Image (cartoon, rainbow, N blue to C red; front, side, top):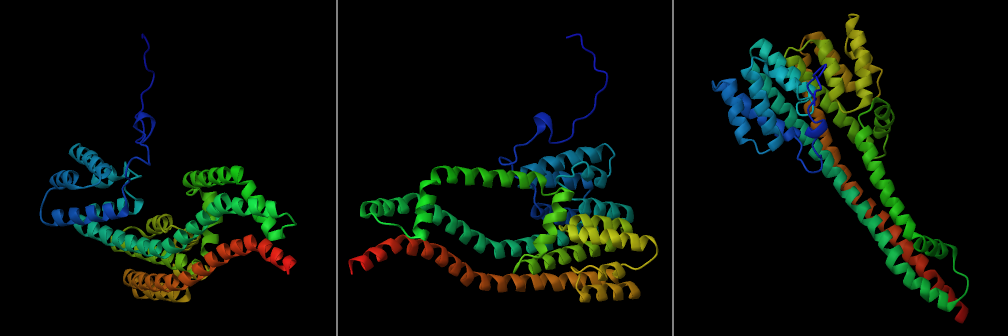
Amino acid sequence: MGVSPTSISEAKDGTGLNMEISFLSKGVGLKDLAIMSRQMATMIAAGLSLLKTLTILASQTENKKLALTLAEVRSDIESGVSLSESFAKHPRIFPRLMIYLVRAGETGGFLDGALESIAANFESDVKLRATIKSALTYPVAVLIMAFVAVIAMLIFIVPVFQAMFTSLGGQLPIPTQILVTLSQNMIWIAPLLAVVLIGTSLWWKFNKDKEKVRSIFDPLRLKIPVFGGLFAKVAVARFTRNFAAMIGAGVPILQALNIVGETSGNWVIENALKKVQDSVRTGNSIAGPLAEQPIFPAMVVQMIAVGEDSGALETMLTKIADFYDEEVTATAEALTSLIEPLMIAVIGTIIGGMIVALYMPIFTIFNQIK
């Protein structure tokens, strides 16, 4: 066309024509990364070269997206790029925690040990997430069923009673009038609810990681009745385990605090660790600023302080993480037992209230006949 380029720059992965449709492609989860890390650690410890290891992993992994990424990593290694630098080119696949632990392992000559630490860390995180999911699945499923039941009654059952009430005449009780009005307007209420739910879901998907949104919702998440304590324990367990892994790998303390803050999954902890960084930067302790944050129990702060004084911070952090892993499991089991009767009571109240409202005019007619 007679046009000459003035500049050429490489497009980022996942943009333009290379953009993947998220609901059609399977992402790379922590479980996939944990399996990959453990297999890679085993093969490197057995004496296989890094190129051979990556070739085997790329051909054997079940996740196609991870397999393609590992093939690209192998090409980078062949061209002289380090493993951590190649991982850093794929921030959507490999978390920063993993990149820095691999970098520490490369620098210290214990890459297999660093990969084992990554695998153990991710496996614990997967277990925590599974525990939370199991605790939330029942109430969410019950609430969805109750919502669907209410919509179905308003669309299909209430109109039948409405026709009967119209033929009988008379003034309807207020609860029945509310049900009838809702049923008559479901033709626009149902689509509106669907649009609101879809819009809210899409907004949350694209905005949940923004600083302003996290600063509002993360503190509220910790204050939710029943579940707030569980979320707090999960955040503390994740922070202490990630921090222990970073210290064990020899990552500088300020860098480690920055990374574990980002990977804690809660803005409250991330904000607290920024204050800890300022304290450490001026030569003070880690435990001091943590004691000022309500999310960190006194036991956690005291154990971290003892670990600092005795030079066994990694050991103390690991013990805290193990303790809170067990606490999360126990709390989730207790919540499941508590929520089941509560959900049954909620559904009974909603459906029972609607049935009573529908039969109130019939009771009124019987009283008039008498």
